[in-house]
Length: 154
Image 1 (cartoon, one colour):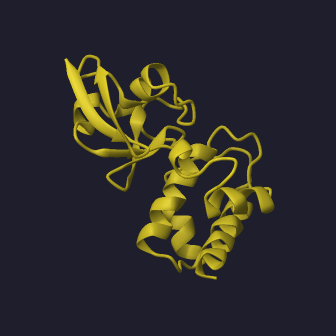
Image 2 (cartoon, rainbow, N blue to C red):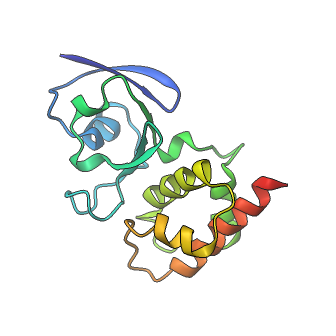
């Protein structure tokens, strides 16, 4: 069966079983390697994508749930020539360490800034609470999100 969705602004048709995880479709069928497999239970955030603007664990989201919706992965936020303000800020603040969780953190932060362009540190920490990072870079990540919010207002 064919499923239709918009991925990073491009309408896509995917022929796969409706119960296939969205993460599998993004990585294996569409070649988007940004979302990563972490816990496989939707608990760690490494696989987060924006589904109609909401951070969503793609590892436990079946393909049928993305039918007709907008999916944004970290690749859809920006690119090397025109990075998203969050991607620039994370580089400037050296907020990534191993980088495994960053794609999910960046889409969670992008969702926060879309609904609240002037968050305080507590709001940033709450928005990233579902994203697990074992590297201990959380303070730098919060600084990076705050920096992106400030620079986006200029």
